[in-house]
Amino acid sequence: IKDPGTYRLTAPLTLTNLHTIKINGRSQLDAVIDGSGVTRLLELRQAQDVELKNIVLQNGMSDESSQGGGSGGALLIDGSSNIELEGVHVATSTSAVSGGAVVVFESSRVTFDGCVFTGNRAANA
Image (cartoon, rainbow, N blue to C red; front, side, top):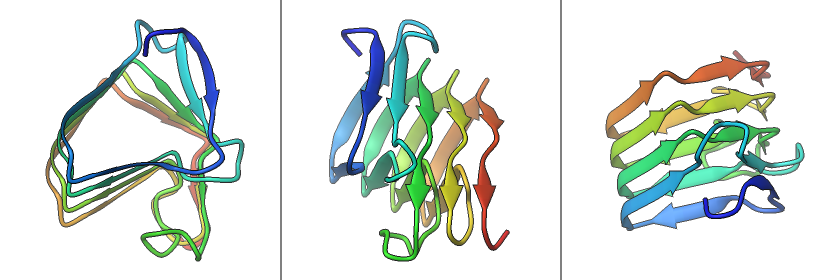
């Protein structure tokens, strides 16, 4: 992320059939992606070699009408490989079904290293 700050979303960032994507903050406090409680933050579908590093993902929300059937409040990973999250803080995200913070469907090699999950909840968990 080039400029520090909070990036507020009104719809999820969807990465589909993409390769080698990096979203790197200098520190967790510099880069915040915020769903304002109205949208999931990221959807990775058939993505490969994705790196999320030193960012905050907060206030994500998925409901029954969301892709993935309302699972994964902050992050949905579906059919993707080589997904790495390092130093990511996922906070206060909610889902209507499962995976308040993250849901992973049919994906390989998803790695969480030094990540923190706080205040996330799923309605049907």
